[in-house]
Image (cartoon, rainbow, N blue to C red; front, side):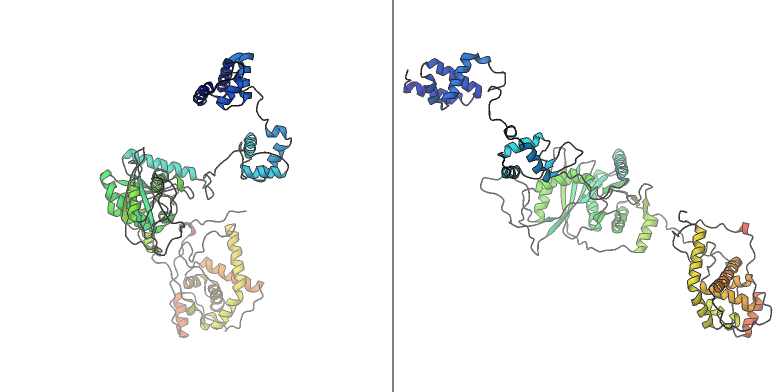
Length: 593
């Protein structure tokens, strides 16, 4: 039976409406019901009016007649097994070849479940085609997902430097200090310098709502001109108030600039917000202008503490952990968001973007301009460092290089170091003792003898000291002995021996002339004799001894006067028993192997 054109037009209108709301199964069954209602020729008429194939309409009729509307499980539009079979099922070896290609660009941790491949899906499909496989990029992606691969972006979680063993301990220390400040109502600020920004018509990342066809026009390159200005935003984040204060400068990111940002914050906001504050907690990074090793940072903080009348407690984050500083993820990230897609042509544009920064959590930001000049390369003198260490700086017991307090009222300066004990014996200069009448040799002979003994004397002294310490020396050599008595050099050793041999002076008198203990003179003369004998060093010709006994300083002075030598011989100190002497100061030794 032929279907009229009017009926076809009515069917076409009905099908146009139903096709927009019906799924595949409902659409197929509806077409079949209309074809059954038309009778003979209905399948062709419905296919013509709906634009579907006669196979689809016939399938709808067959589904209604054969099994009714309950022939398919709920949620399915087709019978199981319909559709094109997967490529990996029809092409044996496809999965193995794909995994072999993916292995060339595989990244990830083998101990983890997921890995990822750096090759694109189209690249993998093209290489499979070179091996004789027919596989599209969608099939490649499906197979890779099934084998544990997935698209992954880089995660910035690795620290640039080796983790410090007390890294977590410092985090806990900062947290405890912060909790104590908040509980006591004292100000706690997180400070840091934001990355520099270039002023001008330079493109910035991000998008903004604009009328169609009217984008923000920026330079196609980011090369800066000679007169381009770069601003340095230094931020102070008030942790308790959830407010950010940004000092915008264009001179240099120095310690003086950083401390002045704190000063400006206190004048504009901190003083009114914390009128009864007694100390200020500052958390900052370990490097840069506010670095832990920067003495200019400590010097300027000392000046600020005196101005504000507040003790400033400083806690540095360990090296390589600056992203844990609260100002980074509570303030700076939102300022960056405010600047996205906008031109920063002037400092006023940058400040306007900062002042407009807000969050749902209640963050508000204030920005000011710091036009002062902050030259780089300024050093703190050694005298100023000693003053800061002795009078202003209080280092904590836990990592004092990271945690310290700047006092607003300096401590009294420590007194001078104790001088020599009163009555300590002096010594005669070597030039005064190196006289032929006293040593029996010319001054040149003493010098030649000293030069010949220099190498064996140094080796012997090193061996003695090594044996006494039990290992190599770990402290710097001292010029004086623990009791303040002067140590003898090689020339003194030779002079002591010649005074003993030529004038037959007693040990106590030679010790008084050299300003040492008599025992030291005995050791010196015996060591010199042994070195001369062991190394076969002959003594230069000497004059005969005077032949008169010289037992006291007066005897020696009179003898020297006869040779036109003005000799200032110290008095022999009284003999102090060993048990009454001051104990020796402890000396660090190297560990015994």
